[in-house]
Image (tube, rainbow, N blue to C red; front, top):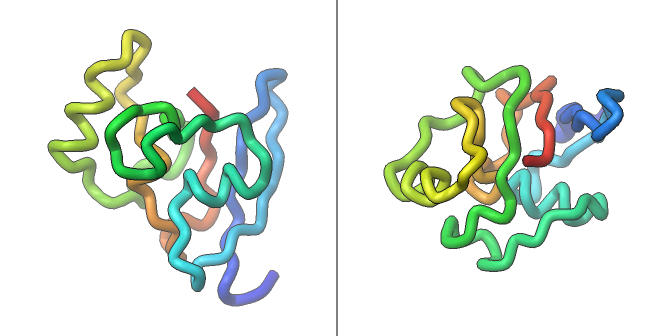
Length: 106
């Protein structure tokens, strides 16, 4: 694996994991990367933390993520099925610390 890439694992509906090699040197958010990998993420607001359609559940590696902002929490709080480990993928910039992150589309 290239030194500018990290491994992100996405849990599929059947419980299996798909391993994705994500670039950290392009300034992409997790939402942008998952959309580029053709995952079914609406991202209606285009990554502005205004719609919560890019919500993911962080199954492993939550401690590696930046702290949730008040704006992100306010948007997540509108979801009826919010979990303690839910995050907006648009607010998670890919970086080396996220290597090994496991997420599931919400």
